[in-house]
Picture 1 (cartoon, rainbow, N blue to C red):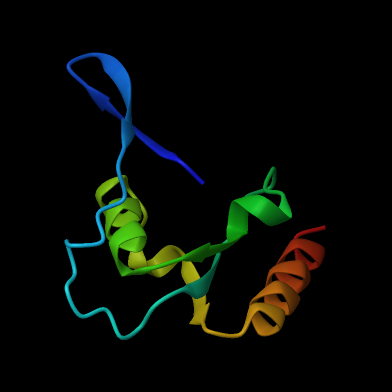
Picture 2: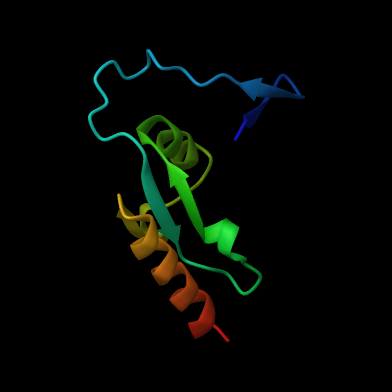
Length: 88
């Protein structure tokens, strides 16, 4: 998924930099965040990596909003669905 940022009042694409972290042994992982009353599954359940999650924090994600970070897609998806069901 392509990422974007605001730079000098314009929306510009953010290039993924493989060199930002030279020895990323964590790799890809799954994130589940707290849902709002309007959240859909894609809003609270997504694949990420260290560089992308750092950008999420810069963009306003709070540590307290994260419910789970895991390498298991099925575990993350299960929790996300449970969280969405509970808010009804």
